[in-house]
Image 1 (tube, helix red, strand yellow):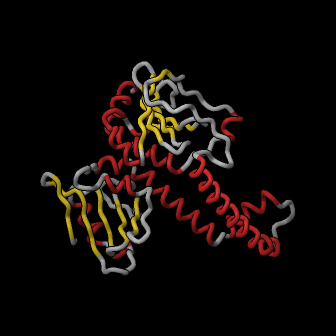
Image 2 (cartoon, rainbow, N blue to C red):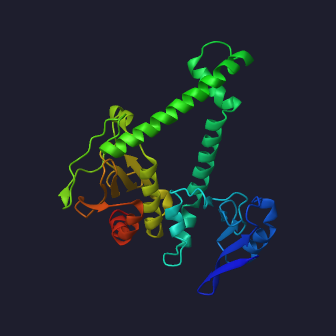
Image 3 (cartoon, rainbow, N blue to C red):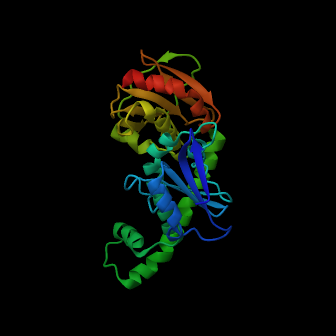
Length: 300
């Protein structure tokens, strides 16, 4: 074992270091597995100086998982990982918070990598999935061969459309492909109706963005110490992205207003009146931790 990071005399994290450029094979991390089992560490890190893989014990208590819940490449930093990594810094160390979100981070990361791999080189099952939805004939080897370049071209065009839509959204503050209803900005408290489930027509027009989901995970990590994570959920509407408890419209914690150039975090008081606070980036949400915890306690 190369490093152990302590807090109040207790080991919190273990770090095993390899040579720069050396592949990070979990089979070469025997020391991590052994020390993780016999120490109080909840997080272990395998790194070659450029790539960092973070592990915990999601699959079995006190036994390090074989797959990381988070990966960081210093030459290609994923901005979605930054808020989670912030919880492991000295000034804001919160190991319990990051572990509570580790399961979601692990599977989201794996799904994203699988999507990326399929988009780059569509596998046979992926190809067959789309053929069965657009082609009525028998799927032969020749049909698969004909559709392979068509799927690759469709993926390329679809990805380009998404990029163009993002650019237009950044310029106008409104999605170019989806109509979004945006309520007037508010800097003072105002009475707002209780969140209601969107109807079928509205659901078609709703687009849940990665930024909204990242905001959700940040809020979830903040309020996790006062409420079980299984109770924390979300509902997206055309006007805002709502975070609530028990999938209950009458238990709103906060609202994310990200459908405009200026982002707002909306926090509701006991009378369900909302105060919207302008934020410049997602990390600003951490500055409202106390208010979010108070809002959670009011509806818990």
